Image (cartoon, rainbow, N blue to C red; front, top):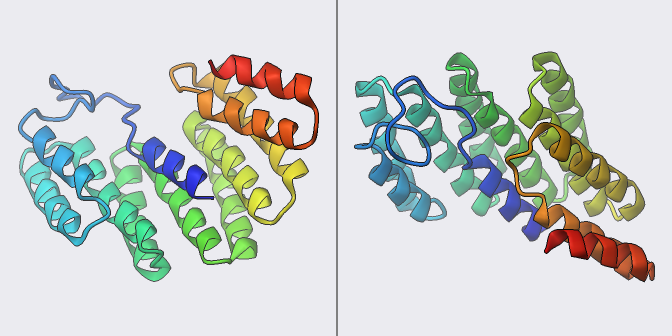
Length: 217
């Protein structure tokens, strides 16, 4: 599961929307805030990261950079996921989701949802994780948010994988891959091809495994 968690943390930190005050950095936030965000990412699994995130949020608020505010709130979510502290993560995720929805950066809303679910899985609460994922799915289709829809499909795959039902998990992964290729062409599908290749290799279906492995290259 650690492989999936790391992937989803990377997805959480991927900037997909461009803010009105875009500057010359990959996340399109105020250039003066970008070095602070870089430090926050570097320390996101350490307590220092929380302090840096607080500084980033305060500076972003002063500069009225709404995207940077949302990014600042991803750091506590990452920290509490790394420490498996679901109570604190839920609080951090709630704040991140509220900020993301208020400022219309819904990719961070769905990233927070995903990481709540991952923390539940890491702590062995797969049934509650499944309930959360179904709620996330309803909201994603209501929002018609492509990243949110992809995330809930992929996350359902992770849940069934952790519940030892690899066949159902693989169907979700295949659906997530198909949806990504159609609706999120800028996303890298390599890790999904690798996961599917491993599944079919373990089943003894070498030709299918090779087909997915070749697509990952």
